[in-house]
Image (cartoon, rainbow, N blue to C red; front, side):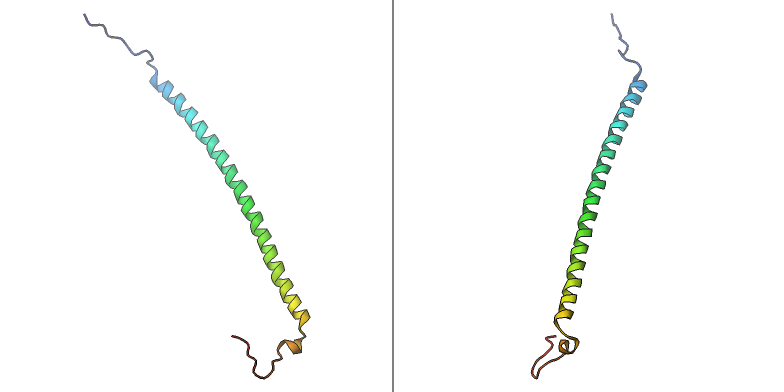
Length: 87
């Protein structure tokens, strides 16, 4: 005598659809969280780059202005005998 039992849950498709919808929702949430982290990191990089540009630009301009103010135009190119430009 052989007894055959049918599957306990015969609605595999419904369970599969529910599983995949849940998994897709979780992946979507994780992706949005990662995008937020990437945006935050990009904002920090942009801010640091702006500070670096300001510092670099400010230093170069200030150094040039100080050099011009310290040296008169005539003295800027004046060289004594035996001096070289060092190029």
